[in-house]
Length: 311
Image (cartoon, rainbow, N blue to C red; front, top):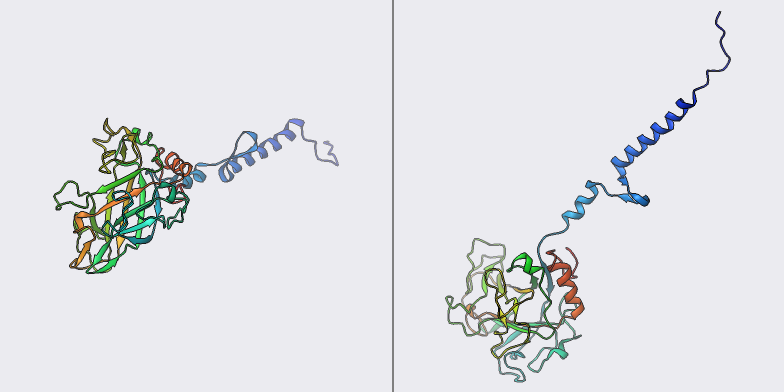
């Protein structure tokens, strides 16, 4: 006759050890699926799902920008006609609030600025637009600093502008839309069906008249200006800077949006028709701020905002 015990049979030591091991393995599997795998040192290693949104935030465009609203209007030009107040056609100034005929780089550095970021105390100016005798100032004023226009290997070598560099783009004395010195283009905001032109275009109601102007991005490495205010700079050729202007710098793209639509009758610039659009740039960025943006945004081909951080 079998004899039963008042107590259940004892588990063997091997069986007792198996349960904790199985539970630990299950816990590790669940942690990996839902919380990220454990990395050495106890840190949590992000899963692919965690990392994807961060990667998606980086836009591979070499760019940072400054938003610099209208500041003031004067018949002065401290690059072309320095020290001669009232000698120029009327200009609309953006950025530094102190610019006049006598301005030099020491005046601009640390001055009050309309720009975001406020550390950009550079001065930007264009011929004033008029409708009849009434000035029309742009309500959108963005200055992009870009790497485009040269090969990627050259983008990686782009250097900051030297402080005090002066650049003029376009030609106030251009003779027509076929004049190769006329480089600005006019278009309509959100209306790509309107072909861009070097002269004013008729924009649909509710749109805005836009002006795009690209500045040259190759520097001779020596001069902050030149007698014609252009020879120290060059546009790239076949994606590279020419031998006489071997130093790549950011491409400055000026985008101005004017509250103008419909007929362009009576519309003019202080310098003449739309094809005389031109822009002046007097660099007064703090050297460390400009260098950081060139390194963190342009050289590595990352789109940044006005703060110089990836946007």
